[in-house]
Image 1 (cartoon, rainbow, N blue to C red):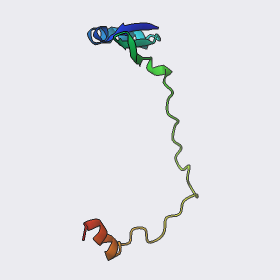
Image 2: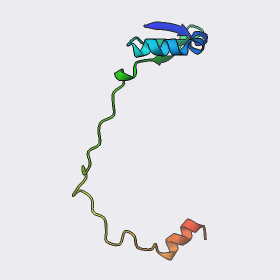
Image 3: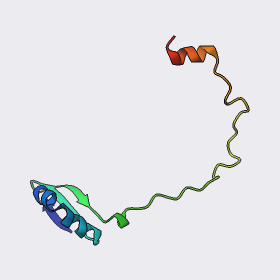
Image 4: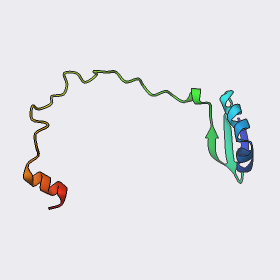
Length: 80
């Protein structure tokens, strides 16, 4: 694991990104105190894939879901 200061990180960003992409973590420090970490993207967990139809049969949409709203509700939305 490499530790570099902010100035070096700004000046040589592409070098440090290449280092991280090669698998080595790079810690960025300000005044000797770690503030950020560059890690290879492959080490970040990928989000789970979505499954189409996962809620099939579990939800019910009422027949009147697209019916006009009552006047009282419309008045509330329109600030009357």
